Amino acid sequence: MAKTDNRTASILKKHERDLLNEWVAELKQGGSGSDARISEKELFEQASRFLALVQQAAQANGVHDVDGPQWGAVRDFLEEVSRSRVQQGFGSDQTARFIFSFKKPLFARLRTELADDPKALADETWAATELLDRLGMYTVKAFQKTREDVINRQQQEMLELSTPVVKLWEGILALPMIGTLDSARTQVVMESLLQKIVDTGSEIAIIDITGVPTVDTLVAQHLLKTVTAIRLMGADCIISGVRPQIAQTIVHLGVDLQGVTTKASLADALSLALKRSGFVVAKKQS
Amino acid sequence: MDRIPILRMGEFLLVTIQVDMHDRLALTLQDDLTSMIERSGARGVLIDISALEMVDSFIGRMIASISGMSRILDASTVLVGMRPAVAITLVELGLSLEGVQTALDVERGMRKLRGAMAVADADTGEVADGGHQD
Image (cartoon, rainbow over all chains, first blue to last red):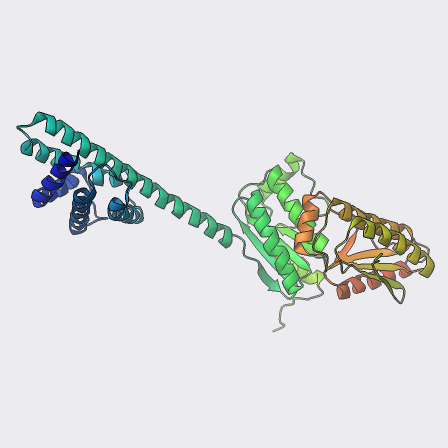
């Protein structure tokens, strides 16, 4: 085995320049090179770094132990490439092609080098294809993981962004809700609103649902829970921003909003809240 | 056995729950409070639960029933200072404490009680019931 391993490594070393040029040509033909998102120079750099790292690892440890510590540098590099591909907006197929398009030039080299030894050629081709498959797989995995990280981060950010509790007036809080309400979000909304009520000693909280696209029984139930919790704390709650369609849906669903003050717009809710807290808003006489 | 103190402030009674409620303590409080209302002729009860960190369904029901009993004894009850976590727990348990009046802190609770008294005094002949039942 060691002999075949070293053969691939030595072929890699011997024809590094040619392989690199052929590979980059192959990549360009595949579409990556003509793409504006990545320059040819960058592509060339990535390819040459990958070749150098693979050659080092293959020489030190053979081509079979891709998960071993010797291949750590190659793996790190592939992760880096995947990450940059995600940021540039490439698809998983284009990212994987980066590795897989190396097969053609490599196999061509193996064929010319080992033309007089068919058995070695078969062995070597198999080893190389296995190696590249595994590296390609690893790249796709890393690509996927980066994408998932991005999604997770965005979800978290959305959760934080979508629950701002704002103080409208002395003793009046407002919570403009954006997006669909599910159990997890209701929990976050409830907690942050209730905590804010305690912190500011506000007696009136306005929940504005203008940004909630649909209200079903579950969402209505979540809203009612929040309203009840606010009442238990000793504050009043007004729901505002009820659109005509939502009012219709709520009645059709048979959701009981008795005892909950609802207003069509945030302005109406604010004026009611001001009235309840004893404030008077008047136009200045000119 | 420890008891929850019931303080008298004019025509109101003030109950501050400073320790974690357990079932026996809640039952004792129920007995003490009802007899105290009867003895003192108090017209309002203020229950401060700002130090209460945990509730279970029993304590939640206890709070509701204590306020119901006070109301029957002609004393309106205001529950003040509930913590967010406690409020969320009660809601999740399905205890919305309908008919119990609430306020953010003792001061506002007192104001609410006084307001209820004034209304009750104005409606002479009416039953002095500060908490309107939904």
